[in-house]
Length: 297
Image (cartoon, rainbow, N blue to C red; front, side, top):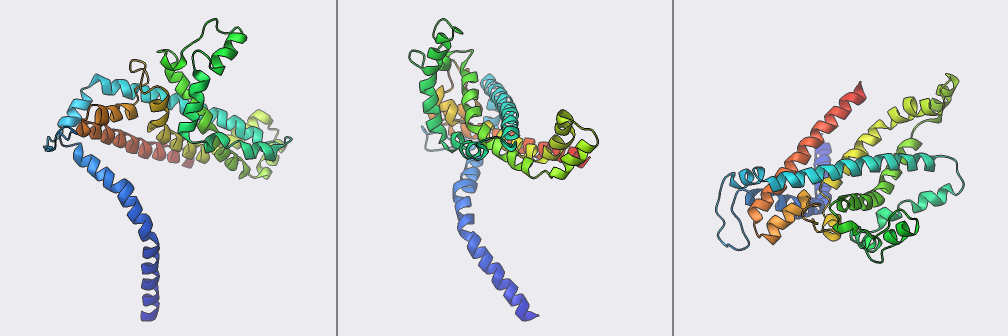
């Protein structure tokens, strides 16, 4: 008995030693900065001052009373809702196509992840050239087709800047969604479709009553991942528009950056980040419980 316990304890120590590098890395890169940011959010910490003072909830009250915060929140929510819905719809269509017995299916499955494999900053730079107002491919093509009659400055237009960012985000993220949904489709047994066909179900009914219900757990997970990723999107906003024009694309990520590093108000910037974190954490819990409850029913 004692020898077995000793062996179990030895195994636990060995497992802990294997996990220790990952735990230390996680602590240094995530937990430590998070704790420091939470502490800074309760101070008037500034890059212009070497003596930060505790100010309780002063930063939070200032942020929550700021019209700028709600403007950025509105932009962020608009971006997330449109981008995630577009990712899911287009990703589902692509997954259904790749799941069919079509010619060169293996080739298409192998290249579909290329947009996702390209770094975000590289994708943003490519689309900056595409959107370029004077000699960009988009304006040239639309002018030749007669859709527009004068060049549009897509990234400096109050009407088109946010839409332009969403298009880039969907271009990059949709392949990942498609592959994850494709994996879910391939896990559905063919016998279920055969049984439904025997009962007289056609293509659309098969999709509504067999494919979609069985794909729901995957859709739940994918949508949550996409919501979190898009909610904290910074690279596309910063590279393509920098929050402009006139704040039309000033997301919460951009507002946090500008507050902390352009205005040097690290305390207030940390408060925005903490509010942002609480919102995401709360949403994730509520969303997961709601979807799990519906799945159980």
